[in-house]
Length: 208
Image (cartoon, rainbow, N blue to C red; front, top):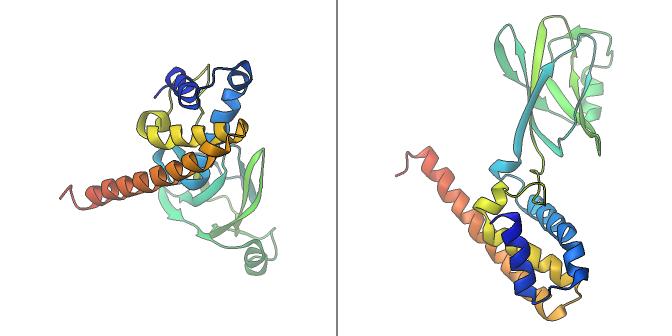
């Protein structure tokens, strides 16, 4: 379901083509997409990665678009090592002197803000570590007049449409449809999760 089809479906299902709804449809879609991200954060379209150079003596690194970091790995002498995730206080106790350098073994999520998510590594990187890679989740580019298609629109139509109809009902203060579309959204999410679980199981057992 592309952007134009989604807009038309929202107006048709809500039986409302008013200027008020039309002017707010992009915001309704954005809110629906955010709700889907919160309910289904492990969708393939939300899983991303980024890599950059580790800087000797620098402990903090920011991933601009990351909403939540899933895993951090480093490359040392062409060997990839996955860092253990710990809380900030654990890192400070484990490596109290940040000026002492070594090969990082763990990381913590320091801050999360509009500018991205910052993580801290310990020990403080020395000259032998060269690169880090971060696996993280972040919303995909949403549907809009400048982006006609999205993974969710192409692969999870029922989830997207029911989420948009729920948000549109809330916007229009349509109590008679609000509960209906909330139930439809919950059911669509549950069915999609079951479908994903079947797909993942097929990947691991060769499709049997």
